[in-house]
Image (spheres, rainbow, N blue to C red):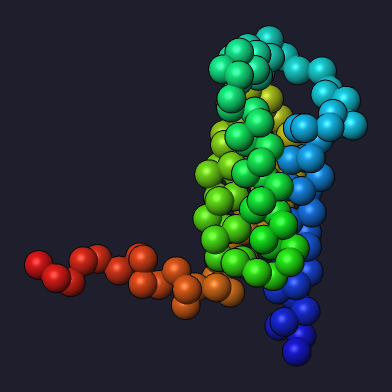
Length: 132
């Protein structure tokens, strides 16, 4: 029972920020903080594509809702994994500093924890081909 509570807590702690920040991508209720020039350059490039930020926001909301609802949790983790990787790389290279890596580290830890808990679902896709 304790194990199930930790999985639910991790799903909520990982899913909720993605739903909130994903919705912010559409509704703009959280102001964007100051960014250095390199970080602003990449953000403006994302804006200029015309499609990337809405796609990213929708992916965050969908993946986050999958985690929060408990339906399709492994698929939600797969959707969010490259987003988490980009968050880590963005903060590592464009906004360096130890305090800037706290949230990315928490997201990685929660994602890895949940991936381990759902490892039975991921095991078949991580096996090499056997039909050769």
